[in-house]
Image (cartoon, rainbow, N blue to C red; front, top):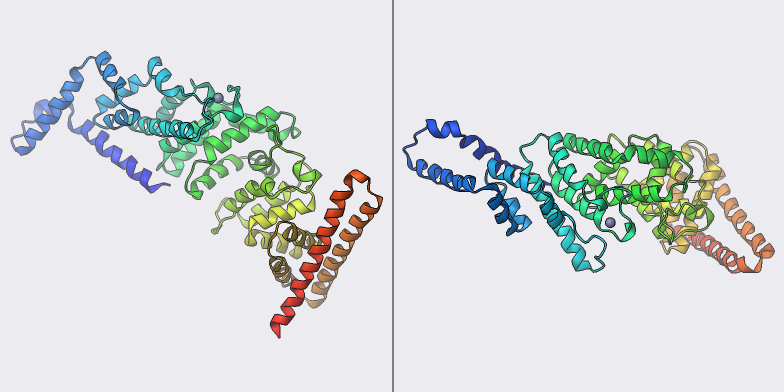
Length: 454
Ligand SMILES: [Zn+2]
């Protein structure tokens, strides 16, 4: 968790817990301090006394002149003031003035930044003035205020793509829970699930046919991305929240959820369910999914995501909603990075899935050619995979299969160029050129390794 935030949390305790205990009425009347401390204590009493004597309405009027940050600092003075502020921020007038922002009229970056900054300040204010409540009560109090804002509730905002509501909610939540330990963050997640019916909504979309509830799919994507995942600075925090979202579900549903949350979109803003099955997709269409997988299988293996589970997840993902074009699966693997790519391919080698593996090598080479990656990388990957096979015969068989696949893919494309209708001709012809170039460059790199050895 964020250390700075942790400091902030403990700082708050200096201001709220200690004074609340030290200046109890009973102790004030019993003790007669005579040292120099007495003066200080007396001053504190009178300072607090002044605030206490102010009628609530007047105190609320004073608060109207303060910024959110100032109110937030004031809430650390004492328990009495903190609870008075909590009362003030519960009023309708305060909510209308502070909570309801123009989420739909942003457009300019400055305006967006100032709304997000405002919600960051509100997060800190709520964090401070609910500090003494037990976590559950704290969350209930805060949620009761947030749920009154329509743009914070799934399905209640009509201007979804252009709305800054979820993003504001996200920075608010992040500020509020920064520095909380994992157990408390678990509680926050469970609380949010209960109050937003997130699990029920996810269940509906992952168990029904893709694209049947396009609005719900997008709502879940935006809620998960903007509120729960996108605002963390540390990848450990993002991993924690992504794990909470995915883990309750079986792997096949996890794959579908990753597609919903990080998969490609159509031009009209729906989940692009056909983008990876119908044609070669651009890199940007798989990049977010690859980043999410890299997060799950980062530098250090976590207890919750073993190499095996992540490899199986990738296999499931490349069949969502139906089998992807091999080129797109290869593109995803490349973007997942060396380690994941190698582990996925080595597991195929170990399990004797030579044909599948050889096809993947060819399409890795094709993607390197098309997306301008170094062909050297694809050759090195094949060499590494070769070492997984235990004897020369298996290695030879693997290499032969790779060459056969190069040949097959070329012939298939050549045949469709010959038989193709005029509209598709250019695309197919371009694909044939790409495969031929990939083949030539791939083998040039192999020949070059011999020269380097001499
Ligand atoms: Zn909205």
